[in-house]
Image (cartoon, rainbow, N blue to C red; front, side):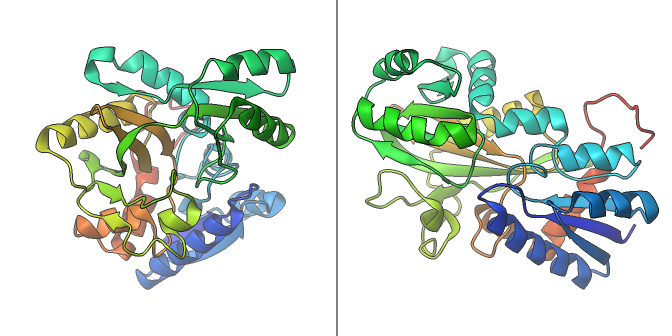
Length: 326
């Protein structure tokens, strides 16, 4: 097994991060002796042609949003009988849709567990404006408005009034289809948890604490961009009890949605000690400044090894019917 098709990028505003991450992964696999073909996620006909005429040993998707992170590339690869890393369509759809993920969290954890999803409402473009206003008015300001299917803080708006939140949401709806309006959590800290699957099960990597500073919420630059340096504290400064509660919650959710591969779960710890699960990234960023890379290094896993191990997750058993003969 040393021929891989790296599918990088996406059809979203996050394309540039997937392209850059994919380039790093392709280079890492080449350094480890793999023969690599690279295709952009938007090259539909070329990807299908490669899978049909000269199928690789494995497909390695590196992109945030459709078609990599939501499982489309996985599905096409499996239809051609080629193992693929990354999320299945079922797991990918849940991780992509923050509103659906919130319902899973609500059903999975009791109130006594102090694990929950953000207090929020989901708006879609078919709702009448008066219903949107009633839903948003039920929330406590300030509010956070963000695409339900986006990541990396793209499109995130902090609104101090309900009216501003409605304007921000209605501006995004024609493009996004569904938008979340959430109460801005009274947070003590923000953390991120990376899970890497292997033959022995999910490996929970050291938790990364994100230093927000004076910002109300962390944007792209603060998380992994030009101002990310010094903002990642590894391991996170948590009490042993809180660390174990976070670890248990992340692994339980990882298992419940059928995630296999490399995931990153973003969490807020409130001043009451609640674990608020914001989202799960089915394929996390793998830039030099990315959170998952810092977690991996803290676990003693080099970037090259991380890439090989992620690619190898394509061959792990998954909670799905064996219908494609893989």
